[in-house]
Length: 139
Image 1 (cartoon, rainbow, N blue to C red):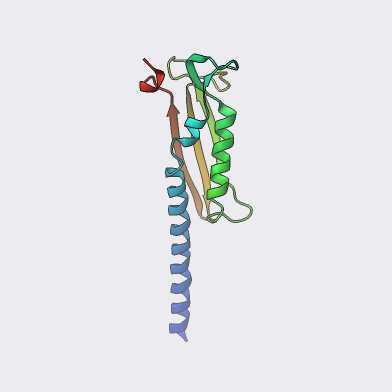
Image 2 (cartoon, rainbow, N blue to C red):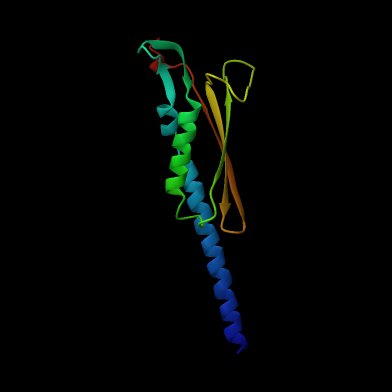
């Protein structure tokens, strides 16, 4: 009888560890795969008349919408019904020392990501996206 109890406890313990590691690694892979696509799609480089801007910037609302949609679609299998990831965005000007929360034309975005892993803890990570002058500027 004791053997059966020990086997049941080991099975439950092993199953819990597997479930946690599956969810944690899945959330980690999803965050790592976020990539720069959402950042590239949220860059504003033309004005309303179609003229090229001297200095492109990020559309913060567009980036936040794309990031939220990406994580909502790709994390659903790792989260329970009442869980959802937390995303915080910090907008800044990468070319000056001023870091202002509500910057009108940010050239950098820092995304803080926090996601619950089952009932045991959280996965936390940060990604930073900065516009830099390069070949795409046409210089």
